[in-house]
Length: 387
Image 1: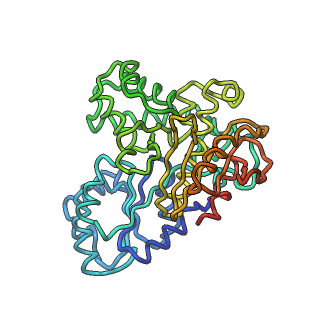
Image 2: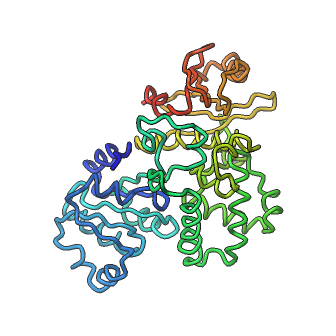
Image 3: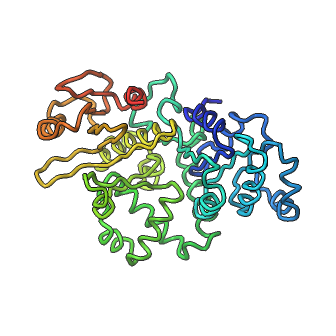
């Protein structure tokens, strides 16, 4: 079993919070993580209807003795549990007494924000990073991007196409249909594919709604479902004025490149290498690695992108610890000095932007014109110096 990078963060927050809540997409490894970090906690899987019934019949008895420590998996299936945990935690004052895991933000966030505010650390576990997935291996970068990052895919005998077909079936049937959030699953499935084709792009809602055959209200609702179930995320544009970031066009990114490739019908790395969306999918991979890195360290870093009327475009602006770090992402294997042009122009115009970085598909690493050039295989290593 691999050690997840977030493990030390989980352990650390359990010494200062009474409850640790781990969220993230289905099959990202939340249960395995919780059991590994807290082997002595009593484990309850609330996907088990018998346990749900047992809790509903006698919630106090279910959580007795009160000094015991618990892992409650898929806790959103018993939403009232947060109220009981609040009472027990306030009485016992035991750090790390409860570990809650859940993949369905539709249901559990209200209980967390209302009942456990100030009592729980909220951590997000996304699929594996490059280092976690491959450790000391050195696979072809595009083969890795196409295959995806879920723990089940660590087994090289697992067919990624079958895995993602099953994953989508579970997602659509369980999270979407069971909650009566979408009536037409076939249309929603087509919508997913249209979103996959827009990963790494600015989101034109009007065009997407027309292509999907839905109105803007439905579009916004469906995008919200995808975001709250950890299928996609949005990166806002950079502005000095924070309010403008919320009113301008965001970029859409899938949180797993394997799922995006599957939805686009990209079934091998050769197809990806020659695909018109190669650059967008490669950028999606790097952005996700950066998001995972800060999630795994429990750090809230701001990630935006820059596009100005004068032609300067920067793929990502990382704001952390008063620093503004511009980052460019290129899917080529051979370095080209022209890739640094926008970074150079930005640095010349505004000294607030510093420590610029460029990630590309090649392996050679060096510094040129005050920009650190990194292999996209080593995103986490490149960001460690910032912590």
